[in-house]
Length: 405
Image (cartoon, rainbow, N blue to C red; front, side, top):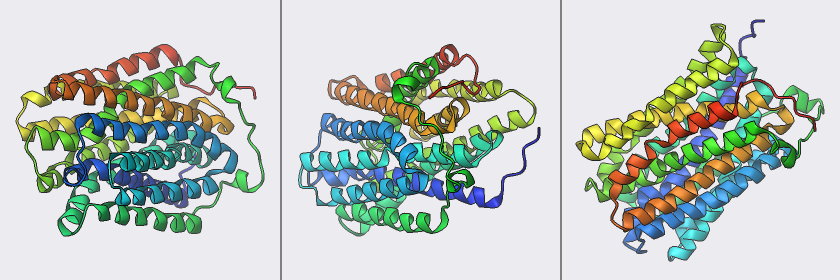
C-alpha cells in the first residue's frame, strides 16, 4: 500500500527539531574550537582535554538512557523544553569557569542536558512519520548535527576575534533559550497523544532481553567512539599538527561538517528511495549502513596527506559517519513499538556515548605518550566496519519485533 505524502507541517516539525540538534552541536563544539584561547588563561594538557570530553560524555550517556525514559513518560513536547533549558544554562556556566575543575563541572552539566535530545527526536519521528519516510525525516534532523558543527568554527572564531572566550558560551546559550519559546509556540503533540492514547511502557529489563537491543548498543559504542574523536579532536589536530591558528581553523574546519550534513540527508534519502522502489525494510536499511561504513577506512590516509587532501579525507569520513548515524538512529523506531522507542534510543545513545568516553580517554593518553595522530586515526578507521558486522550478526532482519509489556 502506497503511503500518503507527508503533510508540510510535519516537515516543519523535522526542521524545528533539526535546529535544536544544530544548537546542541554548536554548544558542544564551543570548548574544542575555543580551546587555544582558553589555554591562555587555564592550562590544559591533552590528557586533561580528554577528561573534559569524558566528563561531558559520561553525563551525556547517563542522560541519553535516562532521557529516553523521561521522554516516554513526559512526552516529547514537555520533555524537550526541560532538556533544552538545562543544557543552555549549563553552556552559559562555562563562561564563569576559573580552572580545570570548574570547566569539568560545566562540561558534565552540558552533557546531562544534551543527552535527551536525540531520544526526543527519535520519539517525535516514531509518533509523526510513516515508516517509509522516517529515515528521510531523521536525515533532515541529523543534518542539524552538521549545521551546528559547521557554523561553530567560523562563528566562535568571530566571537573570539571580538571579545573574550567567555562570551562564546554566554552567546551560544541564548540561542537555546530562544529555541524553547519557538518550540512551545509551534510544536503540537501527535493526534494519538492529544486523544489520550497511551502506549504501553516496556521495562528496560524486558528490552535488554532482545539480541537486537544489545547489537544496536554495541555497534553504536564502537562507531561513536570514532565520531566523538573526530568531533572533539579535529580542531585540536589542526592546531597541534598542522600549525593552524584560530582564524585558519575557522576557515577550514567547517568543510568536513558540511559534508556530514550531506551524508545525513543522503543516507536517509537513499534508504527511503529503496523502500519506495519496493525493496524490503531490511535490505534498505542494511545496504545504506554497509555503504556508509565502507567509506570510513579512508581516514587512515590523513596523516600522510597534505593539508588540503587531509581536509578532503576527513570530509569523506564525516559524510559516511553521518549517513551511518541517520540509519542507526531510526532502527529503534523500525524494530520496537512506539511506547519503547524513546527507551531503546536512549540505551543505544548511552552505548555510543560510553564508546566516546573510553576512546577519548585512550586517545588523550596515547597522544601524551608519543603514539601520534597517525596511529590513533588508523585505529578509528576500522571501527565502522566492525560495527556493521555486529549489526549483521545481531539484527538478523529489520522488521517490527513482537514485544510484550
